Image 1 (cartoon, rainbow, N blue to C red):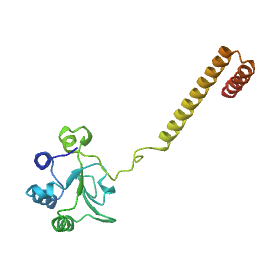
Image 2 (cartoon, rainbow, N blue to C red):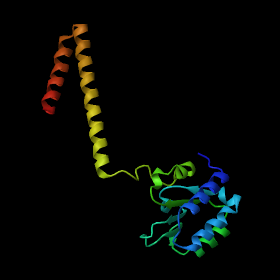
Image 3 (tube, rainbow, N blue to C red):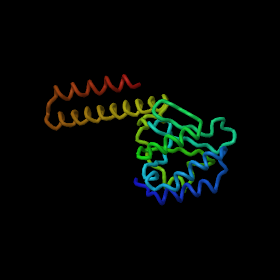
Image 4 (tube, one colour):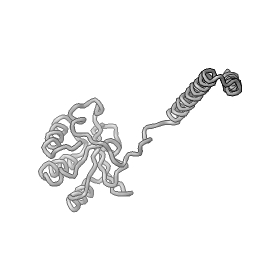
Length: 181
């Protein structure tokens, strides 16, 4: 989904008007971004920005000990000035921003500018229990398919009058039924 610079400006202005940021330097950084359409073209709002080669995480929660984090490759800083310098010097590079505020996942304003994080692994949100459930489902589907195929072979052997095949597939079906009991 492409989000225009105008949409990003509207959202950032909404964000700045809705929430009080814990550091005034963050406001200055957003003001700088808002005044540069070329820079806004390279800004993407995502979840899990820390996984991106160049990301920024801003939290409005007063309990958060690190309300600002800037990631560049494998270096992390909480200094807004360093982030500003890097953003200013590398305005052609993509910057992924994650904003944490109350009910962010229910916010329509946020969802309007949110894009998929291309650096997020497909299984990032899965837990061990999810993998076990998927394995169980696959085993069930495989078993059901096998049983259906055996029943079809039994019907086919009856239709063809093939007693040997009928006894063989019936035996396999009985073996399978005994195993699942």
